[in-house]
Image 1 (cartoon, rainbow, N blue to C red):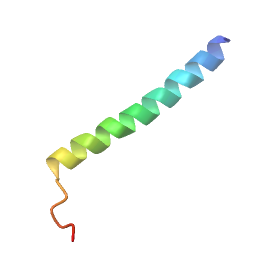
Image 2 (image 1 turned 30 degrees about the vertical axis):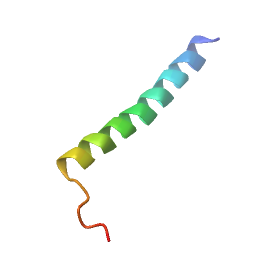
Image 3 (image 1 turned 120 degrees about the horizontal axis):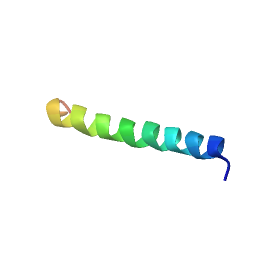
Image 4 (image 1 turned 90 degrees about the horizontal axis):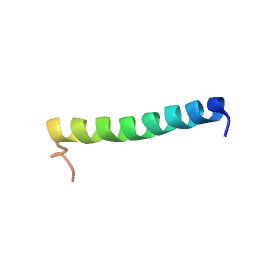
Length: 36
C-alpha cells in the first residue's frame, strides 16, 4: 500500500472510532432519561 493510502485509512479509522468514543462519553455524562 502507498503511504498516502495508509494515512487516509488511519484518518478514517480515527474519525470513526473517535466519534464512537465521543458519543459514548457524551451519553455517560448526559444519559437519555427522557425516552418515552
